Image 1 (cartoon, rainbow, N blue to C red):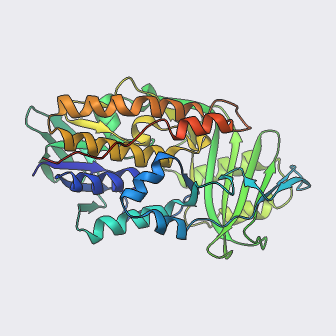
Image 2: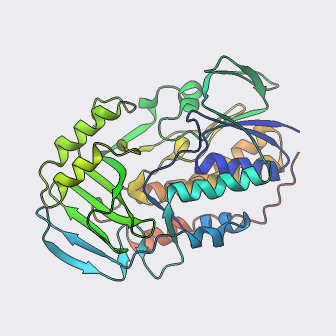
Length: 376
């Protein structure tokens, strides 16, 4: 049985592990964090990505834990309501759609449980890849822990700041395209008493969205501000909180209370809104999947769907051929048009979102086929 090392235990990595096992491979998943990560904003599963969940027998479970928003209201920088809608929200689109909005941590929990229940992968938590060396017969990996192992393939499913991409394809700056804004996400108590209702506060250069989860007991806050690339350490959380507070200070209403909650949030996340653009996602026996290879940014609303579909297609092609010279080019050929259309959603109409026509075209721009990869 051929072996695959997958770097990253989030949506792309966990989905890939499941489908690799189904295609006859032995996956190992290495994750820098001590466990599957929690926190994060609500994400969307749309179009062909719903079919991936269905083929994993997870679609109904995902629907059971979806968000239950009844609508949204838009407010100016002082908190005055401008308009409201009971038909849609900015985060998920039309409420009568078949698309599913759920918390990222709920989706990763479903995926992790599926992989665990089937004993489909070996997990190495609290470790990461520090070096790679390819030969004709495999990839020789050195881990941060000092361990050394050899795998038939290595896949980077390790996000926007992919370590695998840096080791194999070069510096991060060569592949990231900044989109002119930064985003922060964290959770706090539902101090507004929101009842399945999403609230947006919009200023000239900064905005935020609040929505309740966990039966309205908790708020998830998504805050953003316009900015060129900032010189900050993406692992220095206290520096990031200071940057966020400074750039959100122009907003009134409940902003001071929100920023006070930010200071003690256990799951604070901050990063630039950026896309990954590369001439190729594979090299030798190494491949990239999801945000590591073709991040569309949260502005597209399609990052999770790209991760689910990319993982499925990569495993499918490896199931059809164990020869990297055949399987990996086929993976790129199938995924490139789909990735390009979804990345375009983030830049089509900045600040207002992509058109319904563009979204429909992008989310259905690939078919999965019969999943006929037979394994190795």
